[in-house]
Length: 287
Image (cartoon, rainbow, N blue to C red; front, side, top):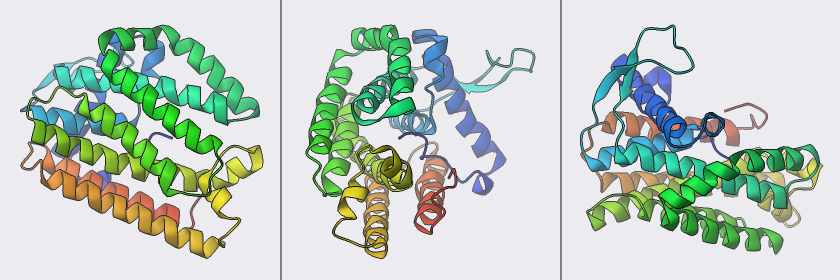
């Protein structure tokens, strides 16, 4: 489900791209330091954006030269200094990855279900750490996942219901963030909720064929019983661009931010481009 929220790198200035990579690498380092090398494999672009946006609400973030653990022979590269924002994003990354694997075990079939079981076992100790670090965060995610699972098990043809449930999951997770100002925290949570809804719809649309073949739950496949392909595509497009509009509106409440140009690139160019590619019919592309 994760990995959709990334910039249109070709439209970023070199210093902006370097800065974005510095956040990505900082999140990777934090996951490795707080959890395990196995947990680092769950690192994804969506949580890198979460780290970027969260740290920007907390104040300036300094780049420091560090070596990459995976590329120790390369010269030190600029990486964002560790902070409570980066560490919280690491907790979110691990908690979401573990709970997504639990969801896959309940929802998937065949090899994908087996892989999910192996992955969950590999992350069991890491998730126990996440619960110790941030019990409120993990509890919020678990409750939201239970709500989402109940909706999926009902086999209702509504696309809005499961998308709203995942948006609620991201909203609840973001409300646990270490942001002192409640108005800023609420705006950040609204941004995460809108993008959570967008990610869920993108993933559901992208996985229609695979889920139809495997028999896994997919809201679009259920809705296809009462609507044709063109109608579903139009519905998905409206929902996706409405979600991005809501994300931009929430972001406006957070401005100005130190890395605003990068965040705006992700929301407008990066996510917009992915949406147009997917809805335009390139469903089999890795977008």
